[in-house]
Image 1: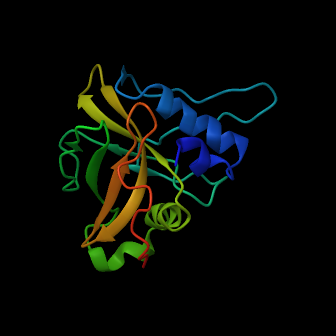
Image 2 (image 1 turned 45 degrees about the horizontal axis):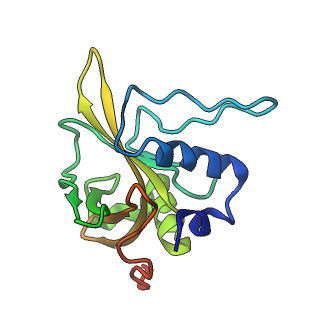
Length: 169
């Protein structure tokens, strides 16, 4: 399946935000500025206080970011020969049993259930000139022991396992 097939049922606002991540896959960027279109409220792409951004206007999480020396034990991204990648991203709240107490985690779970992509960015430089590597789009493929397992799309829009895990908790 293509990215377009995964996003066709989303609002145009959500699709435009995800497109920002897809178009910048593999690029370095400063903190992303809000998307502004005539007659619309600006669309944030990420939020500084939390690693998982779940906007009020959506039932889904929109993006996740990895921070240099962040508070959570995120794992290193694993690149594959076909250009896809995987990443174990730790939930908000260090207690895996408290996963469902955080609205941000619920937003990622909803992405998993409905197979909605998220944008992923990784901090690569600290202040004063903070920079991020835009990893692109990913699907949540599972959750285990506090980790959301993300399957990243290749630059050409392929995902490693389009069927993904059907078991959702």
